Image (cartoon, rainbow, N blue to C red; front, top):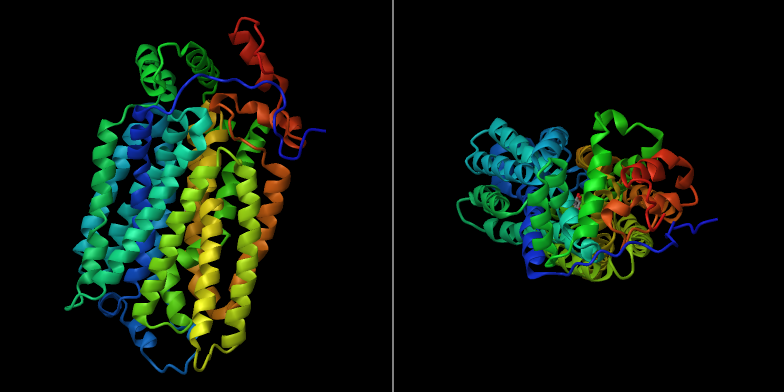
Length: 520
Ligand code: BGC
């Protein structure tokens, strides 16, 4: 029986191609697409803990926050409108990622990135000048549209452009810029919150135009991916781009395989309906389970609500924002570890190690909060060491996420789909991610109020389930060329039976005039 990880045994393809300066610059620029997403994640949490912002738009929350401190601390922030403010964006992102599928497939990855930047820009302006709650919400919907387009196209762009041996590292540039976006936003919140006159939140929200401009301008200069050019019939252009990206004259083998993948993909008329076919089951499992699990690590409880959470467990406003700057820094640094290791140690190792580390931290944090706050949420005096221990374990947890589920949640889906369903399946990945980001954002404050410290155990349970899924059902994908990915499913102990002959060999051989693929 093949290995649990489904690591292919036969000789794989080895396309020539280096890490050229051109490919590095291209990927760095494209990865900037993550900035808009990250900036928003980091900004919303901080802004919703700024008093002048709450007083202007959510006065009820402001009053309950500053009301009687003997009331239950777990419930002080529980407000439907405040939650709606944070999470409206994710519904918008969900919808736009579905539209983005068609744009990305028919017009290329670039136009989707451009649209992403422009929509985000519009949303940032509206938010920076907001006078009423509706302006905030409409602004956030526009931001969401932008994020949907960017998250749908950028990971695909990166995985298609990178030489396969460095695909992991280059793709994680996307997650790195998400984490940089979060950190910059946290630092800005920290300073803007101190501005006298209480209008600092306008700078925080309006500041989102900067990452929007970077993505918009960047996408104008990027080349389209060879895969997408071929898919749209621009053969010569595609060959030239491939030579340029790989820094070689002879790219025939890779080029021919890309053409072949594209021929196969043209036989598919309805990418959406096709997703339901049996042979795409393993891909659909990835497209739905990976983003679902990524959100059920509970990471966004920390990312959105770190200041609120730290405030709840007894930190002052200032200390709360400061602690989220610290977690933001850990998030960036640990992502670098992933960039270093992903193509060496593989995806599975990082997933499994990260899962174990998150689980331990969640149990410890739950125990700490439970011990001090108990069931009724009245902590009394909190000693210093207590705060340090909680922040420390939250940091170790964030580090684990940042080198496992964070980057791999975007990398793995973008590299396992065959070209014919790639764009549609990636939209499913983004939508599922957004639905559950939305849900976690919606229910977190409520869950904190009702589940109390048990909230952390709730997420710990999911970490156990996702780690089991990875162990048994996710094959290793490091060092496999993207258009050769079918072999990992064919040699997987469970998924092999879903890979029909027609899918794995028949069409390919027909297209190659009967000449079997070397590695089949
Ligand atoms: C996730 C976000 C999360 C971020 C934290 C991303 O991969 O999709 O939901 O907030 O990582 O760094």
